[in-house]
Length: 368
Image 1 (cartoon, helix red, strand yellow):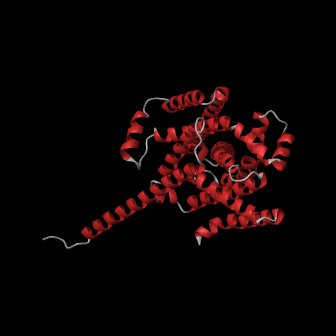
Image 2 (spheres, rainbow, N blue to C red):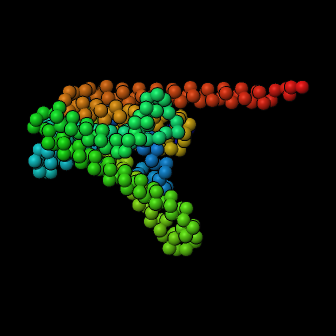
C-alpha cells in the first residue's frame, strides 16, 4: 500500500500523458515509443533517486514540497524540453524561435543539432557527476561496501583537493581525445561544470554548517523574534542551495537520456512525454526512499548509487571519443544498485542471525 501511495500520482499522470499522445498522434506506435523512453529514463536515473533522497531528507518540509512541485516542473519541462532547445540555440548559433520550429517540424535535424552539442554536454555533465563521486569516495565513511577498494580511496583522499585535481586531469584528457574542433568546447564546458559544482556544493555545505551553528547557539534557542528570524533565514538559504544542487544534479543525469532518446524517436513531443514520465517516477522513488527510510534500512544502497554515478561520469567522458550504447549505461547503474541492495539484505540477515544467537545465549540456563 505504501508503494502504491508513493507512485499513485506518477501512475495517474503517466496514463493521462500516454492517452494524450495516443489521442493527438492516432498512433499506438508512438504511445509505445513514449513508454519505452520512460523506462529508459528510469533505468538511467535510478541512482539519481537514491542520491536525491539523501539530500531531500535533510530539507525542511517546505523545501521538500517545492522540490516535489516546482522541482518536477523544472525537471520535466525545463531539463527535458526547454534546456535542450537552449543548448541547440547556443551551440548552433540559431534563434530560439528557429530552434523551436526545428523541434516541432524537423525532429531529425533538431536531433542532429543536439548531437553537435554533445561535447559540451558530456564534458559539463561528466565533470559535475565525477565531482559528486570523487568527493564521496575520497571522504570518510562509517560503512563500507567494497571494503578494500573504498578503504584505499579514503586513504588516498587524505591528500587535499584530490577530487578537484582528478576532475581537472579528466577534463584535460577529454579535451585531448575529443576532435580538434571540439577541444576548446570540452575544456570550457568541463571548467564550467567544475565551477558549478564547487559553487553549489560550497553554498550547500556553508549553509548546512551555519544552520547547525545557529541551532547550537543559545541566542537562537531563545524565543526572541530576532533569533527566530536568523534561524529561519539560514534554513531558507540552506534549502535553496540544496534545491539548486539537486536541480543541477538532475540536469547532469538527464543529458544522456535526452540525447539517447533521438536514437529511438525524432518526435520531440513524444520524447518530452516519455522522459517526463520517467522523471515523475524518479521523483516518486525519491519520496518513497525518504518516507520508508530505505537508505538507513539498506546500508549499501547509497554506495551503489555513488559507484553508478562514477560509472556514468566516466562513460560521459568516454563518449567524447567513442560511442557507448545507452543500454550499457542503464544496465551499469541498475546492476550496481541491485548488487548493493542484495549486499544490504545479506548484511541485515547476518545481523539478525547474530542478534538471535546473542538472545539465545542470554536466555539460556545459568551455569552453576
